[in-house]
Image (tube, rainbow, N blue to C red; front, side):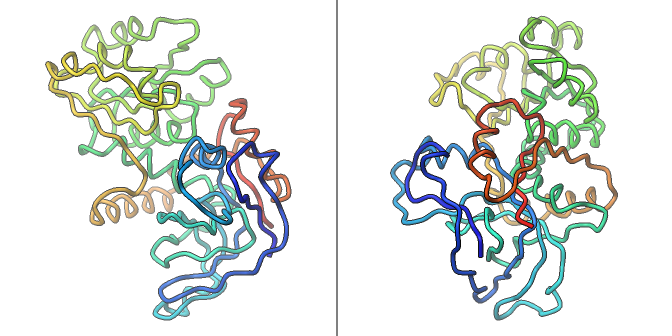
Length: 327
């Protein structure tokens, strides 16, 4: 099979190779998926660069954990009726045989039915972004009637978070850095959109909420945005953060948040109790079947151009999900 891989940490152009590797065989409880598209996430480029897992030894890494394709074979214990099934996938384990390849294997319960009306490129957008967004929005129960602030609304996770919150009848405020990104968030259903480059976010949110602040914050960069989050979160509110990039190890303002009795969650996709994961996937599947979710494919690359896909994500210029197509 054709695949992209790297054998050491470093810049994409220096370490990513594309060539022939052996096609994997599904083990017991696994499926072999013929991939049509592979989703590229910030964690993928952080890992490849060495920003994450620098002390994690490996011989060869096929990047990416998200993708979509068709099941071509099954291992022992998996019904043969699954062969031919269109699926979207997310590899939850530390799997070194990722989705930047023509084929991958993974546990059968990590391959989820892809509705016929969705393209494989759209299916590759799900995985980490949709699961992270859903978990961050719903981690402490429904947000019906609440006001939710989604930071950096044009990001892949945030775009889904806006939709999940709106589908739960919440009022959604989001922040962006350009008019183009504001238009992107409007399609997701955001009620109020604040350009943090030109507006005072704290003042605008307090104006929008008549001084009350927000019930929940879905946070893309905890360390950078704590000065905004602390004054805006309501007493007994919830902050669900899924990254802290600008300040990797934030200084935590304990008492300003403690006196409000807030709950802080550090969210990782699929790192949750099995019963919660199944409930989440059931609800996401329901929404996918109904066509309620908008999937934003911002850029497409071919498998030989995986380096360019990584560089595009790192540039920050692409609005929407970046997909590497393998067919």
